[in-house]
Length: 169
Image (cartoon, rainbow, N blue to C red; front, side):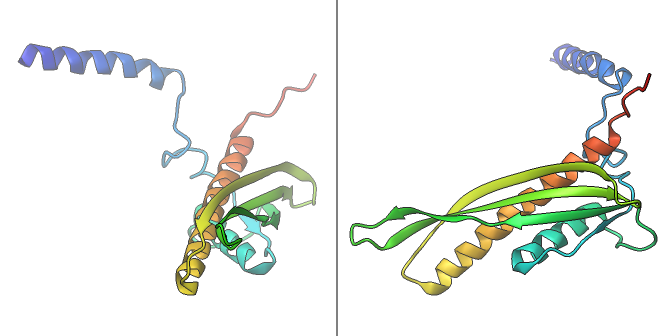
């Protein structure tokens, strides 16, 4: 019994050793790209959804606040399409779809675009007879999607800024 456990532990150790030698480092590790992001100023985003998205981005990209001089500025355009997904037999809406589409540009201090991209996620929520329950479901759907968009934007920027510059000849 002990020799089997010892064999499994030795096998797992042998498998994991090459990962450290190849330079593998998880993106979400404390020493990873996200932890070493340079200071980024996040411009205000219009509407309530923009405020929520900006707050999520601030939590992820500047957890200690936006103090000091920022090396980059992040500009985001947010679009929130909604669509009817289901109707009851009496033609009353019973399910709605919510999406968030964010396109962003990361600009350096000279205003030159460094990174540009987009992120989009969608979900749906139930429309009930209770106005309060429907509103709570709508707000929950919005917050879940915007949190995913913020995570995605942060990861895309971290990967782009961490990538080595192309060699010039």
